[in-house]
Amino acid sequence: MKGNRPTIGYSRMIRLRWLDYTADMVAANRPEKEIIEALRNLLTNELSMGSDAKRGGREKTASILLMTWVLAVPSLGEFRSRGVDLWSKSMSNNRLALHWGMTLAAYPFFGAVAEIVGRLLRLQEQVAVSQIQRRVSEGFGQKETVARSVRRVLQSFADWGLLREGEHAGIYTKGNSIAVSNPQIIVWLVEAAMHANRNGYLVLKTIRESPLLFPFLLRGITPGLFAESRVIEVVRHGADEELIMFSKHGNGGT
Image 1 (cartoon, rainbow, N blue to C red):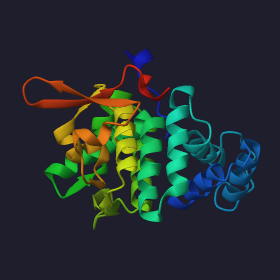
Image 2 (image 1 turned 90 degrees about the vertical axis):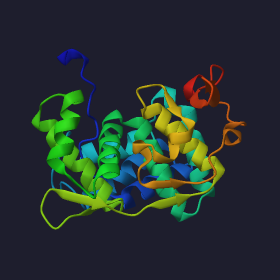
Image 3 (image 1 turned 90 degrees about the horizontal axis):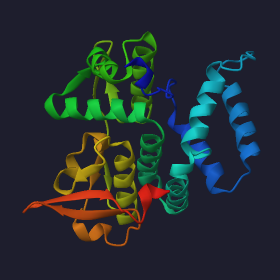
Image 4 (image 1 turned 60 degrees about the vertical axis):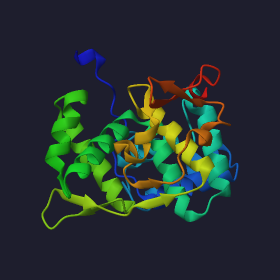
């Protein structure tokens, strides 16, 4: 029913350098008000110059950056804190994985687009914007807002180097594949996929192929990798299947 449609939220193209700037300020323990003002100043130079509209492009963009790294909902507060700690310790090649995980967890719409893109790229070398819009609209409604927001998410993927624009307008091909070998980041990224996954679990042996994580090559995934996690655990299902689920004690990162 229409009243049960999930909200979109992620309706602007977000550049990688803006995310880096935001995460750097959070990791440096800058006060929230200072971060908000710094983002507004940054975006004034790039978006909506001369506009005072409260919901203009600049404010919407700042809101997405803030909800990703600064103003996490209570259920994601502890998850975000661990992400910030990993950011402080990580080299640049792992930091895109942290942006991806925070955005997956914070924005179901972003996750829905990522999952569809990942599934399509598993089957074909290129994807059409119209294909993705049609599939996303099944969960979020037949609205121009959905179609426009899908384009913005795909533009973000392209800016981050994870998709490439094809020879024809509205076509994308796979971009960079990023290897992640840090065990802590892998566990945290899998947790991010758990937050985004509507089923409430992931199958251990298929995590490497999860469409939610399509840009990343995850190495060394074994049941033992999750042994020290307080949030997720490996549960045997049937004779030969193991599931990744939120721990009853960890309560999904809250």
